[in-house]
Image (cartoon, rainbow, N blue to C red):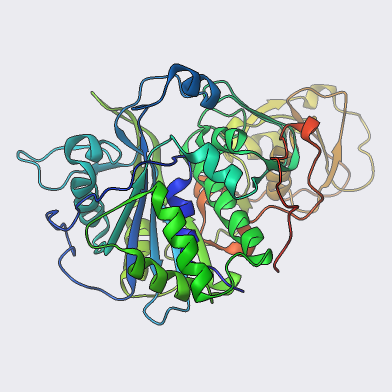
Length: 458
């Protein structure tokens, strides 16, 4: 199935929007490590700028962006197109990544999004090159202003969540399910960083990747991207809403887009840079993200060598007993002293209730009961207690209970890796929203006027 240069421009539009067409020169940026080499394949840096410049008070209220802009990058994605044009890898770089800026004297470090405030597109490009060791061939940027209309012009976007999501900062408030959303609600969905479920950048960038992927699915299925002429027309239209560097023109994007247009979904990869520290405090910078040195280096090495990033265990090690949630954040009541001690040693927040355990244990394996909304926590406890039975219990509140039975209990050491939950390298078919029917507008997302219904292309 086809993917065209709309991939690049949609990535740019994501969490950003339309701006006047003007060149942003990145050609003269000082190269970082590896910046001077051509490398294998083509790398495109796509950024969205957090700026309220030019927005009226009414527009700020409508878009729910009334805060002060930082004139920094809010979204950053590195798109790698392989040399043989048969694979694309899209890597999100979280805005709070703590890196050393390129070309500053004396040397300065800070959040990667701050490079734009210091030196615009050129320094942003040079800093990404310095941090990754990859050469950036093309650069695209945009800000908030036209995102709402861009999505509406495309007939809306699919947003989805397995449970309700709320974020007062972005104005996001949607129910569980799959929704065809207008531009306003989609902007809130992709900007939200303070949601009630997995707050922060990693969950947000996965939502951004999902919106991009599903927009591409639908546009392709509707025949909007079915030939070189329509590809060129689409590129020219969408380039009215983004800025490019002086080296990037319509012909470049059409060539790249035509190659992307022939990719299968299992040849399109999405990932987020692996993180080691999620709350690294830096004076003057606040809370930052520190990349996992070995795993991020393996990621950049794979892209530099033009290899796939999915399935590479150097980037994403495979745990023997993976846990979907952090054991330290799970409150567990256990009615057996030995099992309670073993789970506590495994990092769980355990309360030993063995004093009130039944004198005669019920037949069978341990039973894990969980409260509403604790499904993933129960799955983490079950990973530590293989062979257990898992049951929902409407009478419980924010706790998981373990009732040990008559069978011997084995307690395994589980491994929680937040990078797996929110940013592990996956192919496009793993990123896209599930296929249930679009929820009605009352469920939290309005259907844009004239929007076509969603269609799958797999």
